[in-house]
Structures are given as C-alpha cells and as structure tokens.
Length: 176
Image (cartoon, rainbow, N blue to C red; front, top):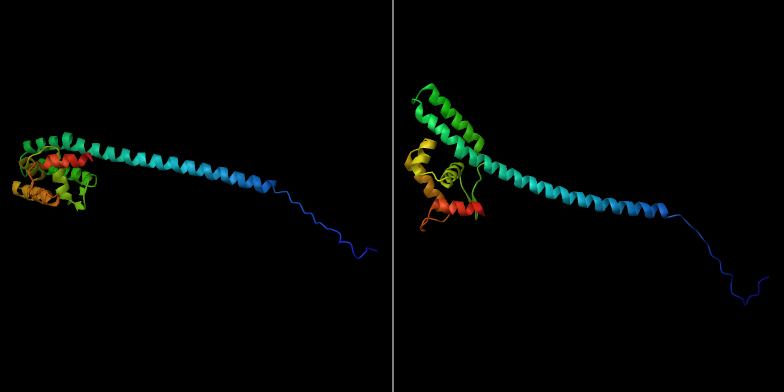
C-alpha cells in the first residue's frame, strides 16, 4: 500500500511519430516553389523581350513599306493610264497594302490624344518627310483635305499657336 503522505507517482505517456516524411515533403514543396518563381520571372523577361522585338519588327515593316514599296507603287501608278485595268490593279494593290499597314500604324497617344486612322497615316507620311502635295497624291486626296487633317493633328497635339515643324514634333515624340 502507498502511504498517504507521499506524492502520487508521475506517469508519462510517450508517443512518437516519425515526421521525417512530412519534413521532407515540406522541404520539397519549398524547393519547387522557388523553382516555379524563378521560371515565372524568366518567362516574364522573355515575354517582355518578345513584345519589344515584335514592336521593333512592326515598326521596321511599316517604315520599309512606306520608304521602299509605296514609292514604287506610286511610280507605277504614275505610268499607267487613268481608268485602265492596270490603274485599277495598282490602286487595289495600294489599298491592300494600306489595309495590312493600318493595324500596324502606331496610334499617337500623347497625353490622351488619339488620332484617327487617317490622321495617323498622314502623320506617318509627314514623319517620312512627305509634303502635303505628295501625301495628297499618294492617298488620292485633295491637298486641301490633307491640309485639313494636318491642322487637326496640330490642334490635337496643341501646336496651333506654336511655330515649328509638325514633322519635327512627331519625330521627337516617336523617340520617347
């Protein structure tokens, strides 16, 4: 019998569980998380580079077509008789190229200013150094219509009361 004045015996219950697999799984999960984050970063960098490359390719395509192909089409158009089948084919070729170029022509967005497709096209030709008369001939518009669009471009860009070349302003903005 146990004397009453003594303390009760200490009882300890031991339980053990092997948590090694749990710790290994946690470590593996952390390793894979770090790997995924690194891959995600690499993919973001590649996507940004792809977008820059695409933009440069589009700009190069537009610039080359405007500088190299369109003048040739205009020369051919000047050498065929008006109203003939050849003139219609040349006009159709030019329209098709413009249809291809239109989505690629950058819309000028400066401080909330957005140019129409026609204004953006004319602004691009102005940047290429074309005169109002040349633009009118290229687009089969009257010089007054081209002048109207140039005034609208200047107005939208806040250049109405300022001296200076529209072309110079557009080129400066394109470099930004």
